[in-house]
Image (cartoon, rainbow, N blue to C red):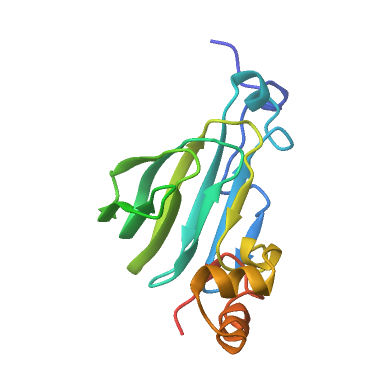
Length: 179
């Protein structure tokens, strides 16, 4: 066997635990996204991935792939609640998942995860090399793009209630640490 050389690993291997974090919320969670920028091979394969770690009792904001990708998610460590909602808002999965569990999130379905006391870590393979996710809370929330009048009408609520709704968690990131 030839001796391994570092240059042979270039553009083919990425250590997710040593890679720069795409999101890092102290006490909340962190994520590394594997895409064509940090692992060019994924373009040829047609897949992307992410490694997400959230702290004990933290929540990953409900989110979905807005580029029609499927997510195959494997729980690596810890455990917690997983909820998946269909396109029409019906709950298609509500379960406790722990290390060793694998589940698939269909395209455009919304998924949310809340860790138990020990936290939760998962690895997802995503069926696009440059995944784009949108979240229902946090600073990248899709709620920010919807006009107040549309929200008031959609939820049959008053302007004051819409303003209160919009003020909650829209300045945060996608991970929420327990308060």
